[in-house]
Picture 1 (tube, rainbow, N blue to C red):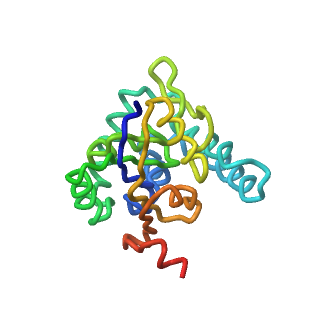
Picture 2: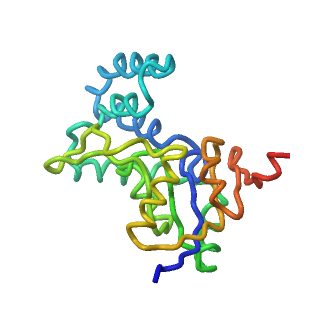
Length: 211
């Protein structure tokens, strides 16, 4: 018999967090690893190719993440502890209370984001999420790489990842609430009984935006 779970699903960037954690972490790391400055022309060039639709977002993202390539995992943990200590105030004020309330009501808390696991994991754990579904990158011999595992966890891919997880865990999932700042997450909204669009930290019921 399948295990029945009722859940709330949250995007992270501009939904839980006031910003893009990948860009913010890149800016944090540049003065600490100045050799990464030499990558900026390549990142800029690949960004143009992405905007011109010559390469896909996943390809651009892999090139952008060259700034973490070959960093030892234990050193990255130290960077991230310091980064999130500085950026903790970037979590929107409503988030912690909403998560605590949903947890008390027995909801399983899922963060579903396109950002990389190694950046998200410390803060997602601190906030009390039960599961993190996100974009994955390889770790080889204890060092991070810019090699993406699978595809970028965005749009319909978020739903596919959820469906894969429920199938693997033999779970019947009821999505009570879904939160995101972006309409690329409409596939996620369609899973939920209640969907909320986050606009500059304010929670707006998605059905009211449609009218």
